[in-house]
Length: 282
Image 1 (cartoon, rainbow, N blue to C red):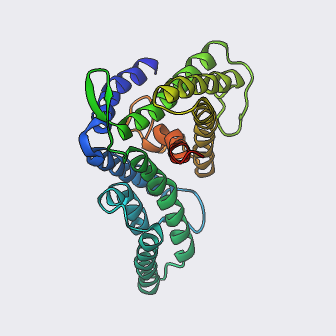
Image 2 (spheres, rainbow, N blue to C red; image 1 turned 45 degrees about the horizontal axis):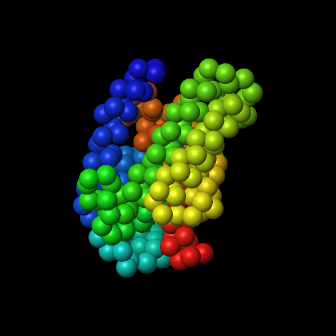
């Protein structure tokens, strides 16, 4: 398992870094929309296979609209979320009503409800990565000229990657106190603390190097250390409610996109907010 996880990381991390540092942020926005698309299809497949009655079938129209959010918001940053949601909801509702009329499917409310949730949970939260990356102010990283947004985004991923790695290895080696046996049996208090400490350290040191005050930098690390792990537990709760181990298997050793990026989805809005508030001198 560890070898598979490492091999996936060796391939995936350089690809993600290339998308992050590509000029303008367009490639990163496209990459996040692609990830959101895969995650949305994982979500739709999992819920469509749930052993419930009536069986939910999350609206594919809403899920596809959500998957497009990161790239569409990069192309049209002036587009309001309410406008986008209203148009998507109207189209999906008309389709579901037509489907109910033609086939007698009475799952209109569950289909729309799970579709809206998936649209916001996956597509909208992924779009905060685009917001974080949107600062194209030139800056330097060593001898290379890069964009400030790329460094903010790298900072977020550094906290997530190092915190997750610390939790994995500490939890495996000395972890004994289980903290969420019903949601995620492998999670331990020792791993949680290791993740939090590493996120705080990376957030503090790298954040100050990026120009933040110590207070804002540490706040970012604390938030990522807590929210990232809450995102993981939340996604585990979704899986347990459906009865699946993983949402997918596209990332060997890690599961699906939702299994790998659950911490990112909860952490990206927090780091974006920190950067916005610190930039306003708040």
